[in-house]
Image (cartoon, rainbow, N blue to C red; front, top):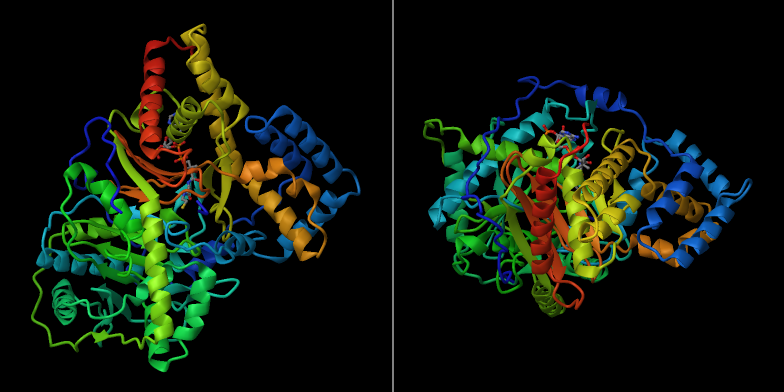
Length: 637
Ligand code: COA
């Protein structure tokens, strides 16, 4: 992923009842008190991201193109690649430059990646970059329930923050290897700042006076809520309830301009408006308070009632963009790294700005918060009265007002264009592929290839994010799910002349090929970030960009009709994001043990795409592959 109420939730099989189905355990700190230096010691023990060998990447690039380009295009690319990697050529020079960069930096890729994938990106962050996260519907249905839930959620996030502050967060592992924990230290107290050509991110957690407040948005009005008592203890749930109640009462009417809607603009337009906005001293102070805050809580107004069936799709829309200016898109600050969103009808989740982190750390935080909220509440002693939370004032000039109107319109257009389908595939989850000794993730990705092929009779460039967190400051690389093996399988599957044993053999090969690409990617040996690095190195050295990067096949390889990501969680939640190309799909999934949650997005303006059809095709592909597995005798593994 680089990234209006939906028509319908695609109900495939019986949806699970809402609720947190899987018991999980609170993340326990490794120490009850601060462990100074633990974070750095861990980070320094992690390996550096390697630079893969040049010839390996060139060979793998050609292999990756095979299923998605025409024979003559491939021949042309082969010639360009040959020229690029010839002894003494430009490829070798760039490779040397990259290796030098790798030996002089903590991570040769991360800074470039954040710049290219996020900060230079000029489309609005909303839908195009920020993911949404949907939690199961909660049990409250009114304002008081909303406030109590929000108070508990804030207390849970502050509990997690203690582990970050104390450096006592347990280290995570993938495939037995310890992971980089840096992203956890970037998600609180930080914010993206718009720029005319490039944005930036500020993190106030490491400042000499780290923030002690959060921002609460209600009826498009922003309030500063101090969440620590003067003795340094976090406010209790009861104290938070009192403060949230005061905020809601102080903002019963929508009397102000929805200044938050400005953060939905294209980044260059917002960058220009931002300079104008903060010329005013009060505006500057208000914006700084939002940027410095630990996180934001958006208390949304009542929404039209929807059936339980459509609830998750509607919730995904609220979490992703707020439904447009007439609903909640102005009740957000989309530049804020972490925003929790709570509706009056039990809808809840989050939206996060992607530059500082990937989904898994956000989901881990949310898993902790959900589990924390399940704990029985302790009886709390009466407390001293707290000061009234401060409203943030904005002085809106006619010029800014005009930009706000533009932002409302462009947000509404975007909201109407986005189609979002949440599908709960309830026939099986990770359990079935595991029982058949297959990687569940690979199984799902191959099913997606089959679903797409059945709709379009072709394979397409497919992106799946792979974690590079085994390396210091690692972010992601790309797993290219369309492979020659997957192409052979999807082309064979509906061929009535083939035996099931042949189809099963092709399926096993496709699943294995995907798993092996995954292993290659998470160990830093995939091709996409290496190719990007070589291109960036050319730009850095002020050399002309080599022809392989101007090749139509390269553009085709980067035009991801399918942009996908697995974000697993303990809680029965689901992340969602928009497509990365106008005629593509954005697909996020959470494979639980016995069911799989999918979010499928596409643009209504594209005549090529249809989210409902893809979701149905996906269900059919998963079921057909399951049937093939169950009904076909397998050679002994
Ligand atoms: N037989 C039996 N079980 C198997 C198996 C096999 N052949 N292969 C895998 N499994 C098991 C695993 O042990 C694991 O078990 P668990 O549920 O007890 O943990 C489970 O199946 C899942 O494994 P798999 O489906 O292969 O996926 P994964 O957990 O290795 O994840 C990626 C694969 C690509 C998603 C992961 O490596 C990754 O990079 N994640 C980060 C993605 C990211 O950053 N996304 C966010 C972008 S915003």
